[in-house]
Length: 280
Length: 308
Image (cartoon, rainbow over all chains, first blue to last red; front, side, top):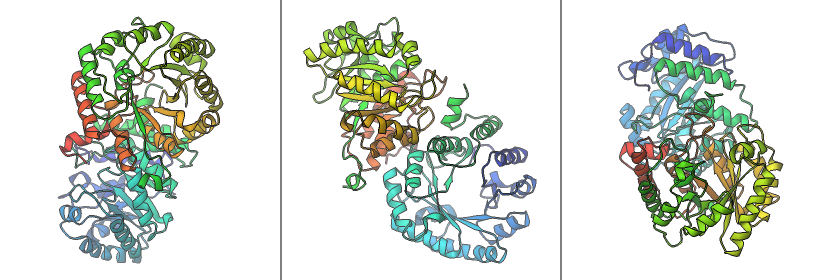
């Protein structure tokens, strides 16, 4: 969601550098129509241009069957589908109800099953919605359960507007964990209100062992101009290292990658670890 | 209630250090009337304690040279404490003469930091503080003790929890009613915070402990959460996250009060503080300093034009 459209070679270099850091999963691109998401129009070139290292997954977003087929043709071996716990958000984003969106994904799931392609499910707005405000944990649990039952191997619970706190995170996870095994859960926290690491800490304390993050904290919040979005991978890894939790990620290489993409985008990093360390 | 069920404290006391720790570490020297206005605005937010200024020699800390004028100029709201820093007996007497009714002393868990910062060993600094504590006791003036470098030192690197516990105990024994444990360079993580608190809690009652976390590596809220999960009930923070890190150029320092309150509100923990009025005070001082806020809550809230 960066302002400028990033050139394809820069994207490829970024992904290649990330592949050298020890990260095991790197979301490479999105097979959404370029009409909606012009920044990802080069999805096929990116998919075909990156070095795919063994042991690393390069999932891609697929909004529908057509996108799925294009993705697989371009070499994708794992895909992601995006649901939401808010009706209004779904309507505004993809112009249909939650139920209808999940039906669209049925086709993707069937094709993926036939092709032995794993599917990751995202649930947006799990701790609040820019349109609806509060979202009930029960609703998040319901949508997560549906997506898990459809065949998603993992459900990434997204605090889309970063509004959650350790309190709401705990409440939401408690509800979801009744329906989906904790081993199949991930958290995708936004740092718009500075709560991301505290929220992630609570999730870890409850047994979640998969965390989404973005190098240099790339990706602002489209719902609060100028505010930050994704939590920075560097800051997350710093915390996990301090907790003695193994990630396999080399923090220095990660910071170097962050420096690379920030220079290419001509912007400052959103990672505090990076900001603090540049003097070391 | 929600917080009780989760084993968290019902109430957290926020100690606002923006006007002192914050402004002292900002590049721009703020005029006296702006300082006074800031403190007055903070006094109306519900904050129970606002660190107003520092009676350190203006030779060392020019930003706080107007300590007497500030002390005399601010509104003193009932129920709000206005502690001031006092490095030695002379500063203490100056502070009392200017109307201070609570003081703070600054120790460190690192010898190198102590030498570089206040030009004496930890032991020598403790002797100075003993003098202050003695005078303060005679005058019924409460003394708060700070321990810097509790999770790491810019010169020594790693600091042992045992050393932090030792210095904390020294300060507590001499009469400090509260010990604020400072992650001075923000290097701590929930892991090191836990280990350090476990050691200190063996020597000092939980109710006498506070945490003063810096957000230089983005770890502050996670560290604060860990501390309150362990039962700490006093948290230092700075409006708008004022006060950069003097040891990492361009990096942030103090954690933003707004962001702390947002988290505590979400946890159902009472602070008595009105988040919106703190954001307004933050907006005021950032405008006066011509700088962007370091508070993510403020950034997000003022940009949507809506508040949650």
